[in-house]
Structure formats: structure tokens, C-alpha cells
Image (cartoon, rainbow, N blue to C red; front, side, top):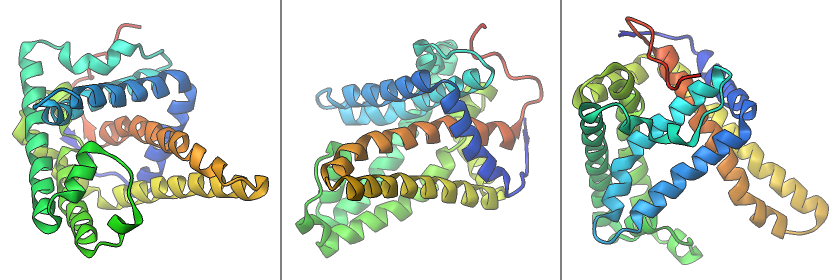
Length: 263
């Protein structure tokens, strides 16, 4: 395995590839992303351990979405079973992925713990359980400090786990080592990732702006509120599709990666 230093413009290309491949197989990629969200939601509903289990599953299911993007990019249709490919590579690979998921869960819980010390757990409860954000909550100084502190603390967690699931799955890297390699890859390619992030921010903003324009033209504010979730899901689906390309270009295998699924 070799770490590649990519050009800054590759960050834009990753986002373009994500959009391109998503629309090559829109039903499959959107359906798999919905399955991804549904699986995490169902796991979170389990009593006592649900929230922890949902966090543990995030790396493995993210690998499934990346494998689906790879399959679609190769011109094949990604089957629903692709989402769970990380659990079909043998007991040793499954244990490694679950260990990585446990590390991710611990990291997120630590971030939420720090935020709870700031605002008494309101932001952490909103993050874990969901729900609406009221104007009173948003204007609370402690809640805002907790939100920004969590965002800043989660950033290094996100960087460390960005490539880690793919490294564990496709290269057999040990979970702890995969975090180090992922961190180095993102730091070494900071300019590409900054442009990549800016493109997705722009796409998200464009989606929201389009809804506002449609609401203004039609004279109905309900269009904006009704379309917010579908647009957010669409952008998120394309974003997760693009993750495969960030990994593919940042790491070169010693040998060809094994096929995701048989054609």
C-alpha cells in the first residue's frame, strides 16, 4: 500500500465523480443510502445498547456504500447485499471492523461527553435522539458553545476515521494503524480535501437556495419545508458515493484490489 499525494484540483474531481456515479445508478445508490440510514436508526432503537451499536456499525456500513460506488463506477449494478460486505469477508476481518467501530463509538461518546459538561447534555441528547431545534435552544449561549466545541472536537475524529474503514477492509490494516494512516493521508492532501469540502458546501447551499427560489416563485413556503429533507438526502447520498474516490486516489495498492462482487 502506498500513500499518494494528489493535486488540489483532485478534490473537485472527487465531488464530480460522486455526482456522476450517483446519477449512473440513482435508484441503487439512493436506495442503499436509505438502507444505511434505516439500519443505523433500527439499531439505535434497541434498548440500552442501541445508541452504542449504531455508532459501532457506522464504519462497516460506510464501507458498504463505498463498495457500491466502486461497483457502479465499474458499470455494474450494486446489489443491496453490498451494504453489508464488510461482514462477509471472514471472522477475522469482521472482528477488525467491529473493533474499528468500537473505537469510533468511544471517540464520538467522548466528544458528546465534553459537550455535556458545557450545556448539561442538551446538545448530546439532540445529536443522539434527534428532534426539533427550538429558537430558545438555539439562542442559549451554553448550547451554542457546546455545539461549536463538539464540531471542533469531532473534526480530528472525522479525519482519523475518513479512510480507516476502507484501509481495514481492502488492505487488512490493523484498526489502530488505519487511524494513523488515514490522518496522514488527509493531512498530506489538505488542499484537495479543502476544495472537496467547499464543493459539497456549495452544493448544499445551492440545493437550499433552489428551494427558496421555488417557494418564492410559487408563493408557498411549504415547498421549502417539504423539500428540505429530500434535498438533504440527495446531497448526502452523492457525498457518500464520492467517498470511494477519495480513498481510491489517496492509496495505491501493491496489487489490484479484490473485486467487490462478481459481475
